[in-house]
Length: 91
Image 1 (cartoon, rainbow, N blue to C red):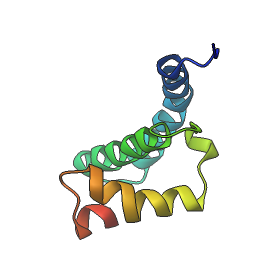
Image 2 (image 1 turned 135 degrees about the vertical axis):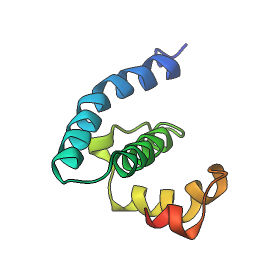
Image 3 (image 1 turned 45 degrees about the horizontal axis):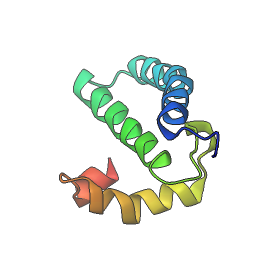
Image 4 (image 1 turned 30 degrees about the vertical axis):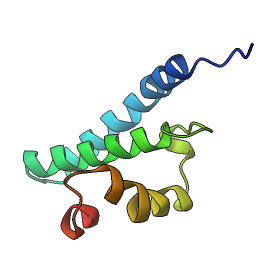
């Protein structure tokens, strides 16, 4: 039996990613953006982190590459996000 526990691995990645998300949020706040815009950006990145742990191999946010972003925006996001539109993809 494999020692891999998907749920534990995903939780470990979420814990690892949290300081990255917090730092991104702090940076956005210093840029003068509106709170709603900041929330939208954080929600979008958080959704991307879900994508990174949806299929194996699982990736942390800082392990994502250009191909991951492309696959997310062109394939996964439009299929999985009920609110997907051209505007939401651009944001």
